[in-house]
Image (tube, rainbow, N blue to C red; front, top):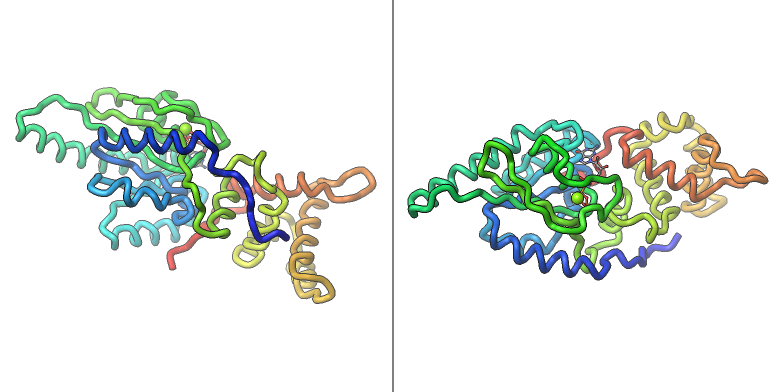
Length: 299
Ligand SMILES: Nc1nc2c(ncn2[C@@H]2O[C@H](COP(=O)(O)OP(=O)(O)OP(=O)(O)O)[C@@H](O)[C@H]2O)c(=O)[nH]1
Ligand SMILES: [Mg+2]
């Protein structure tokens, strides 16, 4: 397997997005930093630290329903220890949103008080939603406003332009932004984690390599869930993994092929359809069908 994901995942429009966001940061009172609860490290843009200094930040661990509850709580404590407030949410069901709203309102009322002291009343509190592509920013806005204010889609790059949305019966305004990545991913592992979760457009990704890497991760860390999902026997898996007649990556590929076979991803002539197998594995992982899986745990 190729060790390098050589892909252009920082398309031209990202630089423009960043410029726009930099300008808008100056206008907002609070920034909601949406992270993917399964990969809180990889989904955190290293540029934000600098961009957001002196801004009130709240970390939102979204897609918490797809991550392990115990690990979610560990991440909340991890951020708390750094003096950063963090909330776990599921923007599809709405879980955690009331708690998040409460936190925003706390910040808003503090800000109102400060403005009131300066004699400026009636000013809106502006909240920017920031995050990597596909993390659930627009879904979050729709949950908060309780209507379909923003377009949502199960692929990265759905929101193309920023959009202000006002919360009804409130002086809070939310700013939806396009997903943002950064020019140089720090490590190969981070690139892989972003790929597993569907942050980078699939059509520019080597899907088979990503599914291979995911399979390897699952076999090392979530073997039981993996076996259950694909009705595989532990003995069968262990025999393949222990085979020293072929390279380790061939052993893992063999297990991928088993999955393909079980799921009918077979070409005419009986060969395994690698592309289709890769799709099945990634789709199952992304939609939580293999289970709630936290890829990056607190160290
Ligand atoms: N399971 C789960 N799915 C979610 C959650 N939040 C959003 N989604 C799904 O994730 C996909 C992306 O959601 P969007 O709200 O469009 O994400 P976005 O961050 O606005 O994406 P871009 O505009 O492309 O940057 C959609 O299929 C949502 O239904 C969540 O908390 N849990
Ligand atoms: Mg969006």
